[in-house]
Image (cartoon, rainbow, N blue to C red; front, side, top):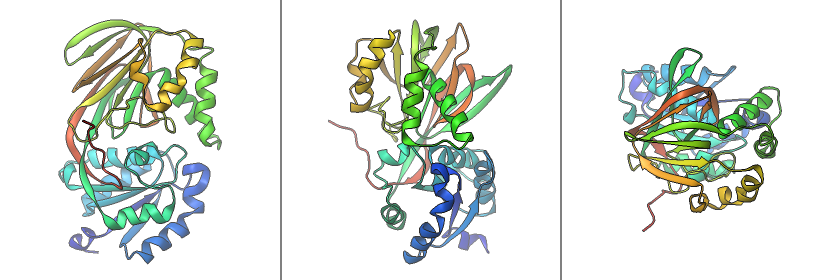
Length: 319
């Protein structure tokens, strides 16, 4: 196939294990809907973690300019990282879409992408696009510094611990929407508040922190609104710092994470910035888009208008 024809063809990267096997089980139905809507595509199926990164990178180099992720937020994260792991083509020239089949589907929730396949495929067919910021996070794995890109929300501390536990269980075949919430509650027993230095756009502060979330998006953990006012195209990161709280107070405040009012809590600080650095006295786990990474020290940044996305409902700033 010539490169110019690939410009009009979607590469569809399917994670067959997403949603506890829904990626594989429902693919025939999804592909039939692509055919019904006359959407030109080629499909590739991942067989291991990280392979969507390779598929996306190779696809761009070979001439594809449109990629659909069929999976959860982690698969979409791999696609973004694949696009950013090549330098041949400007990343903002690439368009990505998503058919949500994961357990959380938090990025798609923000953009009104239906979990009903007919609706999600119609979003692809309508092809309404906007430029979307891309986040960066530098972190350590042992003594080695590494870098990851993210499109939705990254975090460290308690949030990353819950993500790590959840991912280990997913790797063993356990996957449902209640899994994250169960791990959230059970992790409260052993988690320890950690003193840390947080530097926001060069201005530092010290605090004993429960968690730090850094977002282009608004939802994580299957509907929790950790960064409830984040905008995907404003060129800024929204940062939510939850300071020291007792276990009972945390449980009583959980509803604030779901109704979008977390920033009203007196022990929660919100920032809008371009750069965040976190240094902690003991190592804090780091995650991005629900993917477990390494640990602190960590630095978060932003690439404005970093990629094109297909959306269902556009997020606009409230007056």
